[in-house]
Length: 92
Ligand SMILES: [Zn+2]
Image 1 (spheres, rainbow, N blue to C red):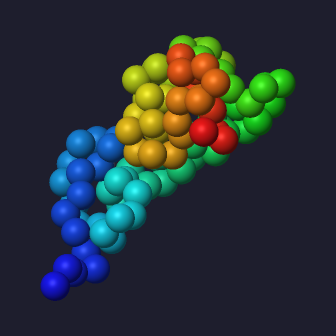
Image 2: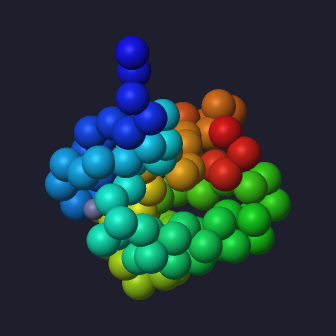
């Protein structure tokens, strides 16, 4: 019988933690930081005419590293656009 809790690996810091099965892969330590960054990225992308943007441009605008932006992809919060696989999109 499958349990409701599962061991997951945080997409942000890489630490293994116990989380809800099928839930987002973000550990409790990173949750707040990731949420904060995600909100800023989401606002920025929403501002674009076609709602997609290069990770490098996002990083530059927000003053964070591109690596941090791409971690949001690892966490499953944002994804590469289906129309332009080099750009990130919030609508998938
Ligand atoms: Zn973490």
